[in-house]
Image (cartoon, rainbow, N blue to C red):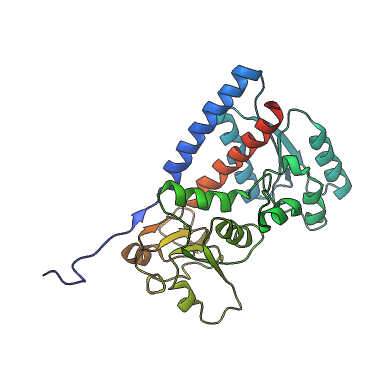
Length: 301
C-alpha cells in the first residue's frame, strides 16, 4: 500500500484571472442589454489625486477594464496639492451627474486631505467601493442589505462560490482586520452563515487558530506568513496579500508573493489562490459589477 508521503494530493489552484474573465463577459452582455433597451450605459467616475505610480497604474487598469465591458469612464485627475474643499466639490458634482452611477476615489489620498471626510461625501447610491459607513453598517446588521459590498471581500466570496466551495456552517478564519478587506470579509462570511474568527497582530498563537479553519482568508500584508503546517488538510485558502520581495532574477528586482507560502500550501490545502492572478483580477471585476448594479437601479426604475 502506498505510504502517505507517496500519495501526495495537490491543491486545486483557483484561477482568479479566468473567473474574473467570465464575470466580465457576463457584465458586458448586461451592459449591451441596457444600451439596446434603454439607450444608456453604466458610468464610473474614477478620481485620482496626485501622481503616485502605484495609484496611477491601478487607475489606468480600472479605466481600461471599464472600456472592455462597455462602461463609460469619467476621468477626474487632480493635482497633488488640490485643496480638500475642491476635491469635495468635485465629488458633489459627480453625485449630481445623471450619467455617473459609481464614484471611486483612489486611495491613499495626500496627507493634507481627510480621507474619511471625502469618502463620506460620496452618495451612498454611487459608493461602488462599498466603504461608506452606512454601507458597512448595513453589512454588519442582520436583516439589512448594503447597496454595495466592498470589491475585494465580494471577490473573495465569488471565488469560493464559483469554485463550488460552500461557506455555510464552515469554520472561517480571517487573518487581518483592515477596513478594506479583513473586517468586511469577516462580516460577509458571517452573513453567509460561516463561523468566523479574526486573527490580528495581538492574537496569541495565531497558528493554532488558523489550523482549525476550513476557509482561510489571508489579508495581513505579511509576506508568506502562513506556512503549510498552519493549514488544515483540504482547507480553502484565499490569499489577498500582495507583497514585494527582493528577487534579483527579475528585471524589476522584486517579485510579488502573498501572505501564504504558496508552494507549501499547495501540498496541504484543498484549494488555493495564486499571487498574482488570484484575488486581484476579481477586485476589478467586482468594481465593474457594482457599477452595473448601481446603474441598473437607476436605469431600470
